[in-house]
Amino acid sequence: MNSIEVKKGIYWVGSVDWNVRDFHGYTTSRGSSYNAYLIVDEKIALIDSVKHGFRQDMLAKIAEHVDPSKIDYVISNHTEPDHSGELLAVMQQAPQSQLIASAKGEKGLRQYYPGDYPCRVVKTGDTLNLGRYELSFINTPMLHWPDSMFTYLASEKLLFSMDAFGQHLASNQRFDVDVDFDILMHEAKTYYANIIMHLGSIVAKTLKAASELAIETVCPSHGVIWTKHLPDIISRYQDWCAFKPAGKVLVIYDSMWHSTEMMAEQIVAGATEEGVQAQLIRLPNHDLTNVVTEILDADAVVVGSPTLNNGMMPTVAAFLTYIKGLKPAKKIGFAFGSHGWSGGGAAQVGQEMEATGIEIVREPIVCQYRPDQAVLDQCLSAGKELAQHAKSC
Ligand code: FEO
Image: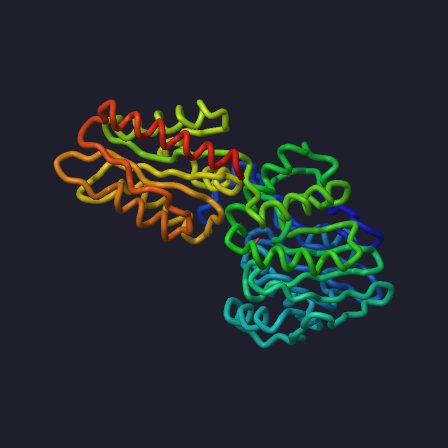
């Protein structure tokens, strides 16, 4: 696949990773891309690089337009190795080149890639003149690493947004208009939920700051470039960072001998009777990446586990550990589960749910061995209450 011209003299020179399916625990079921951008002006600049292993692919694309040894500036918008993995290799080919990074970026890059290379530290408002084009920089700390920054090209109304607005989506197309809209938005939502969800207040602040800039094109570091659908993704980001609910109840559980499952089914039945969207998710049959995507806009999340050795099932523990770091906000829920001769599983689930930020609205619903009719009625009624909450949001 060749490079693609984004604007006059500005090229996508990244790599498509068609077959990656695990991105530090995130299941990338449609692959990904590592987007590097080359600006050919009086001075030559490369914005970010690619993951280690894709060097030759990127250099070949750069060589379609300029000898890689002529690069003057290597701009690092984000230190994470999927974008910095080949920065040093580029600078070694272009010994006169200078690294441009935020202060935290320089520190992190020197730790990842020790070496005596020149670096100019930039902060919000600083500029870099390339000739025809003048770039400016905007620090966006913790979106999603301390080093993160945007690079902005005002004359072209173009923002290089690193991970923000990214999607793990492998495609031979580079622009939003050329891929299926629903798949694009689904992958953007999955990316937001699994990478950015816990940073909602920072995203809101960044969107507000970005609204003061003229922007027509956003070039993220993963997936396709936003042009026509830019207003759509900005609107979705506004909804996602506010945790705008979709009127949805999720019943997430594991089960040993179907007792906890019977309870889960009754909770879903109660929510369904009230006419809201409800989903039954047995953890071993679902990928956590997709479960988290569903959680982003859920109103209620209930979690069930039978008791195993006085505690919750390891599948449920892994799920709760994952979502604790992602801090889902504006959700209510409770724990439930069966036990044998002694309990403890559901109570432990409740404690861990509270630690994730889910508002616990009732004590755990529990049963011994098999749920009797009274317990099933309690689950049905609890499902209705969750649905009523969802309808009121
Ligand atoms: Fe795509 Fe945070 O790296």
